[in-house]
Image 1: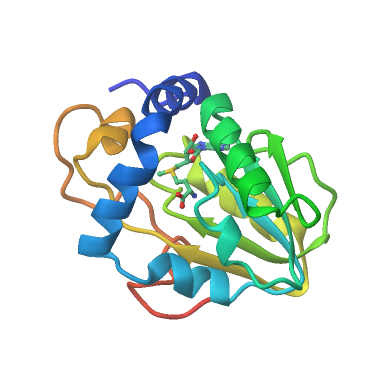
Image 2 (image 1 turned 120 degrees about the vertical axis):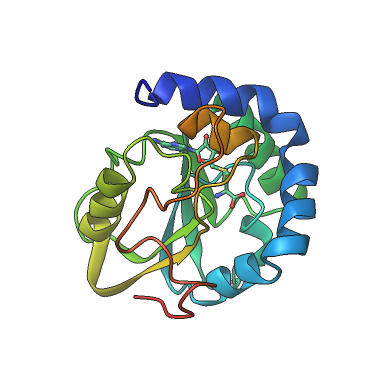
Length: 183
Ligand SMILES: C[S@@+](CC[C@H](N)C(=O)[O-])C[C@H]1O[C@@H](n2cnc3c(N)ncnc32)[C@H](O)[C@@H]1O
């Protein structure tokens, strides 16, 4: 099967964007309730949120955090921008289009990097994890709420049409709810 590209991801999420919140929230409520809230509660200080999507996490951050959210899909980002404007978060949330496998950020700038439900779609999750560690300050936290590969529409974007049964991502990609720890 051919490798997933950034262009595939962008195309799939541009198309899905308008349905994303309702589909995602329904799925989460059934399978991983509270994971998003848990992840955001671990965040402190200057936060980089990778693959921020439509910004579902943004209203959940503490008022004393600042957040830079990075996202590849223009349509997902547009919806995130709308959410920021509607929630009056513009003072402390900055959204940028970008590739989290090659973050356009200097080393050691973030107190926390947050990733929720991203590793199943990022073409090279290891590169994204390396970048997350690179931009963290010493002692910073990389907080993840992730799940294994599935057979839903955006997993099919990664894995083709056959349901997958073995984990495709290993290593520091699942701090909760699988293990309940963050680092
Ligand atoms: C399942 S959504 C999760 C969105 C959000 N984190 C959330 O919790 O709702 C996965 C997101 O990852 C984004 N994405 C995938 N690969 C990316 C990359 N290389 N750089 C930036 N964003 C990426 C997709 O465009 C999509 O918005």
